[in-house]
Image 1 (cartoon, rainbow, N blue to C red):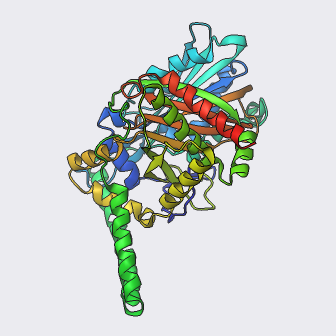
Image 2: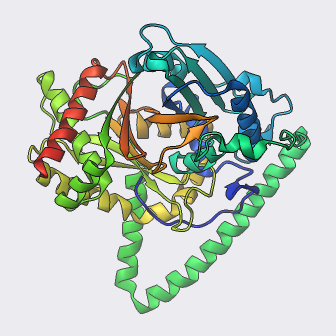
Image 3: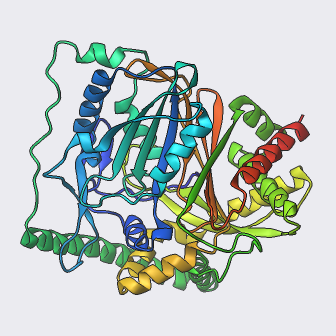
Length: 484
């Protein structure tokens, strides 16, 4: 994710340094409503490889602690009957941990490929939205005595940065440390679930809208006084700034008619998961040598891989539509706020430039322009206006903004040192972000000195997912080699 500051929001509660909102943000609400089109589902999947099977009893106790510490893991999404307010989080009165924690045996040779094959139908299945939006699978039968974990989470729960912070309750820095800490004390007890009546849901929704409206009016009046003062002092510059703001809003919301890729036009519901790894030190060294950031190198490599994939089908492309999350967290918020704190920026990426250095410089400038969009600071307000439209209009706008995206990228920093879960060392963590209307999502997650790159492709759009993964890996290797 790219970095950017944003206004802080009022939180519902705070657990272990993570704040949890009672109501969904406007951005999350649009995502929630939009995915009633199943092609726009926002399911995050992560596949872990462990050095051995974790102690099941200890794992269940660890999960019980995590559910107690992290409200989202025991909460469902509810909404007032008149949809006055956005969806809100409420404790599930029928919460059953055994529904969410499942054990599977891996068939085949027990390879990483077999683990991904097992994860694919899990990634495709919709959540039961009357329950908390997560599933955890413990997988035995991997080669060399290893084990797997498949974690499935709805994007409405959190973005990648917040998820890393939240899952600290599920891991340990030293093997057995969590078990030792639990020794001699009672198991965590869940607080009593507090459910709301229809009248209470309606009353709270009205109060929430009133509170948000009051703060918005205050912000508008403050801005209006400032605008009047600026118009008096600097009329020309103020008018130009207003025009740029209007243009920025248009760029953020403007529907894209169709994908730029001539071979990735269709969209469906079947997914294919592939992945590869690259040393983090190599990525950092390449970034320094080429005068960019790690994210610049990543996006540049993805662009080169997309060009190579198209070339295999005899298709020449000069640019493609990319969606990339711009981080809206404040500098002092290192994942301390749950939920999604990002803006889905869309940009046309030049993939036809063969020279890696030139391609990186052009992409770097494109990304810089996206980060500096004037309307990003007011995204919640803009999306709030969209959410006030009839639902069919909101869904239509979300579809127009996403289904013509050729590819999405995301870059999430993870733990720098090895971590453990119930005594088992986590060897690899492969991230699979949701395509959510794009042809493919390519996500990089750095962990313990390695960049794990997960590729979640829509099978209707990407005819040969394994070939695409090969092209992406080769492109990144060529970029690293060119920087030496």
